[in-house]
Length: 171
Image (cartoon, one colour):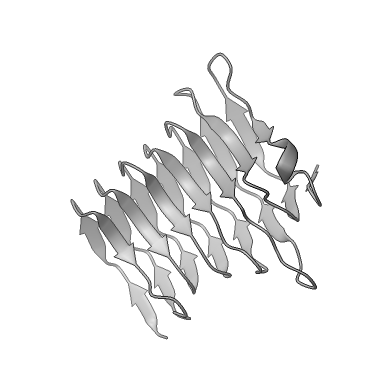
């Protein structure tokens, strides 16, 4: 529980790591030059910056609201790997990552839960990454009102594996 605001984490294996069941908020903090910038296993993320991290800028493992964050210059900008949850990823700015801007890995909302709503994000990948990639049996993904742009041969604005098309919707 609680709110953690205005923190900095750099030059570590993991900048921030929330424990399983954390129900608080990480707000207006920054993580850079880590292996993983922010590794979140519960709670909400608002207004954070994750940049220059080797693996991922932000990794999301449990339900919550993830809004107004910036993820840039990472391996993957934001990796969403939560299962059995209802979550919202909205109003984030994601750009210039190496592998993917937003990567959904085994993400699913679960039986009886609402979809994973990915809304009003801006994702610009000019350095050769896919903007949005869904893989590993991600389900119930709903993309709405996102601005997406890519550059580079063989890269995609939206790359959805065959096993991740169940319940997938985009406008």
